[in-house]
Amino acid sequence: MLLQLPGYTEVRMRYMMLIYSRESENVTADELEQIAAAHRTVMEDAARRGVFRAAEPLEPVATATTVRAQNGKVRLTDGPFAETKEQLAGYYILDCKDLDEALEWAARIPTGCQGEPGCVEVRPIREMRGPSANG
Amino acid sequence: MDELRATVDTIFRQESGRIIASLIRLSRSFDLAEEAMQDAFAAALAHWSTTGVPANPSAWITAVAQHKLIDYARREQTRRNHQDQLRYETKDATLDAQAESEMSCEDDRLRLIFTCCHPALNEDAQIALTLRTLGGLTTTEIARAFLLPESTLAQRLVRAKRKIQQARIPYVVPASGALPERLCAVQAVLYLIFNEGYSASSGDNLIRRELCIEAIRLARTLCELVPAVPENEGLLALMLLHDSRRETRVNNNGELVILEEQDRTRWDKAEIEEGLDLTKRALSRHDPGPYQLQAAIAAVHAESATSGQTDWRQVAALYKELMIRQPSATVFLNHAVAVAMSGGVEQGLDLVDGLGASGALDSYHLYYAARADLLRRLSRREEALIAYRRALSLTANAVERRYLRRRMNELGATHNAI
Image (cartoon, rainbow over all chains, first blue to last red):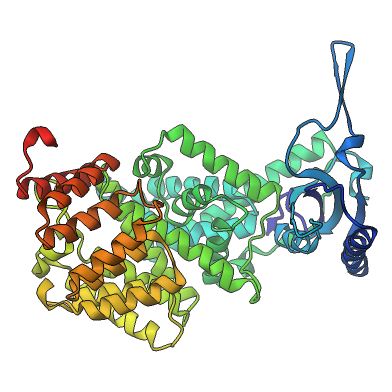
């Protein structure tokens, strides 16, 4: 009899999908509604399949404040931690059985507006120790 | 003892891919599987020196390795139970080792191929992992083959294995919808391994030879495990047909011998025969792809007793098909050369010049080398020399440099001009 080794059980794993998009100032209300609708489709499908954990959009990077606390001092910077062409625009958290399933979902998440597709970074969420971790 | 060691080495080379594939499924860990297999091989060496080699050595090693895994699991479980009861689910998920091992080990090898060549791993990592786990090459050997520091290669393997575990890259054969694309990734890795071994650049020849053998072996495995896929057969055929010329590609002075000048009587006939059969079988499925077309081109050469008898029209037509599917500079150049060889040297040169017109190939040595060869055939000596000189300035590959220098000498270049 072989004992199953820990660390690779049948429990599903949470993946965070970080959406990076090019921010655009001249998006019309119509276009915004289209993007939102596309997200709703994915979210509803994920919910139907019992995969959905969370998904939220972020306000533009112009609203970002970066905080660095060091040696008891707090330094604030106006803006994101790094200026990049594509900015973090939102996230999903989905329960998937493995990376392949996560990648399939990630490919369905809309990333762009005005024909400029962005990308989705898929990261497994590390399970924290403690009794609540498997909830 | 030396004899036994040689026997065990042979078994390792032939069977380690199969054995580790089943151990990875059981343990869900590349590291534990590797450790268990190494322990089992060490045990075999110790045990068989007194008992002799068993009838089915591979089964013996697999059984011992499975017991090692059980030991590791028990030890781990005990440690965890003592340390931190709440930390992990101590799920009572037990597997019956015997029933498991009766599951098709072919499936395991296929799972392992797809996991090692998973597109979520970068290409270098895919290659290293494939050679290490499926090929059974040591980290030292792989590092030497790719002219990399061993620590770089070891680090690459550690990262890849960690990503498989932590991001949970599955140990499965992809669903049929994703299969064709994933198969392409596997074929690409095997072809890269072969090319690394086949390319004439400097390095350890013995290890390079090993890479070709390994690539061919893995391509053969792929044909067995995923049969009736024409590109799998095309890939194996392509490797075999190229490998058949291995002994004649470089002369005793380490100089590159071009196809035209190779001693065709020394081409490996068994490899050619198998390669031709595979090419025919693949093409009969009427779904040609880049590997099949390249195999077909190699087949035309293999079937020509002398270079003069080469059906260059056929080669040009095949390159034309390949250009549609794989529009790379090398393919375009080869097409132009084939056109030139089929009689229209001027026409071929026009094609080459057309390719270079955009300036995109300005730093591509093969562009200048091809142009130089055609100019030489047209007896446009001065222009040929300029092109050869340009090609020479753009490649660091010692074998290629020697070839270019020789051509320049033949055209009467003065030494200080080189």
